[in-house]
Amino acid sequence: MLHDLGGKIDEVREGYARGHLPLSHQVMQPSQVYHAGAIVILADEVASAAIVGTIGSPVSAEKKLFPYSIQISTNLLTNDPEGPITAESKVVKKGRIVVVDTEVLGSKGQLVALVRSTHAMVDPRTTGPHKREIFTGNK
Image 1 (cartoon, rainbow, N blue to C red):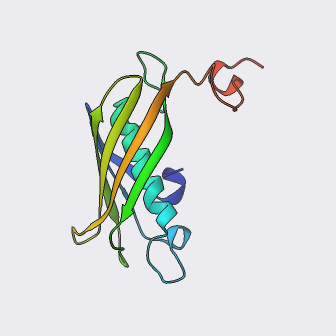
Image 2 (cartoon, helix red, strand yellow):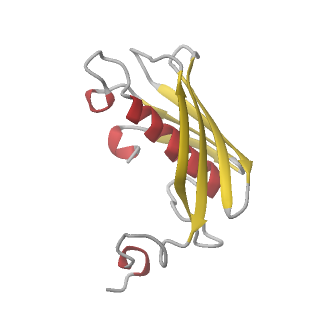
């Protein structure tokens, strides 16, 4: 979804990821600042990249597990009328349940949001309400 909104994951390494989202009409409130949902999308996708450890791969290669977001707590502190905003995520707890802290910064370096997210590591081929053939290739 981040890519569809014009955003991108810029850097990923073990337990860390950074990405950005430009300001556009797709992500803007009528007041011409970022919609809160767009800020959360950026934070969530960058957090997932920090967990998985690769760019563009939603499922971890070694275990075929996907980090389903099960809780996202967001403190919106300010907003940005120019963009882009940048999110930096750090994994703070690993395991079957993963916790990630994300800071979202505005175009001038101001703290826009603090986000803590919790993710359950699940096998998407066997878990969830989605069509399993997406992951298995079988119908």
